[in-house]
Image (cartoon, rainbow, N blue to C red; front, side, top):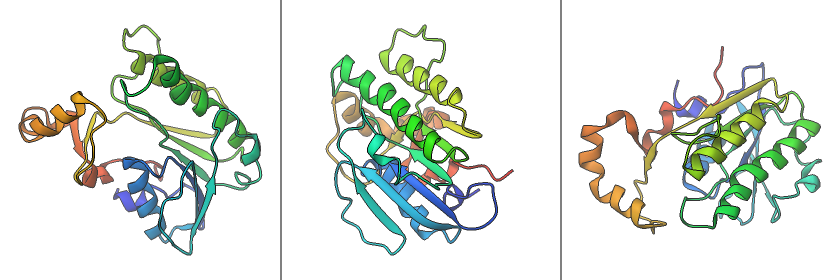
Length: 213
C-alpha cells in the first residue's frame, strides 16, 4: 500500500480525517498525502500553531491546551479517523512533561474523540521499543506503552499502532539533541548495517495507517 493510501479508512465513500501534530515531521507528511488523496473529503488539522499551507480540503483548528480537549467536541464530531502524531523528543523536556505529552494528551484527546465520533479509527504514532508491560527502564518506552494500552481500552472499533525506529529527516533541520545529531551523521552507515531499524521520512509510505481489509 502506498503512503497516499494511508488515510483511506476501510469503509465506503470519501472520508473525514483529523490529524494531530501536523506541524511535526511525520504529521507534516501525513497531512500532505491526506490532502492529495481523492478518498479523503476533508482534513482537519488540530495544533498549537498555523501550518502555513492552504488547501480547499483543509480546516485548521488552533488548540493550545491538550490537557483539556473538551472544546474540540464539535470539531471532532462526524470524523472517520484520526492520525495522532503529537509528541516530543526524549531529553528535550522534563520527565513530567514527557509523560504529560505522551500519555495524558493522548488519553484526553481520545476521550473526546470517542465521545464525538465513536466509530472513528484511531492511528497512533508510537515508537520502537514501546513497552505496554511498564517494565522498561526507559521513560519513553514506558510512557508510549501506557498510551497504547489506554487507546486499546478506549473502545474504538479500530486502533492502529505504529512503532517506527529512527526516522531520518531528509530536509535540513535543527536537531533536538546530541543523539539525533549523531544519528544524522552516521545515517549512511547505520542504514547499511541495520536496514530494519531506520526509515527515511520520504519512505514513510511503508506505513499503512488504515489497513483496507
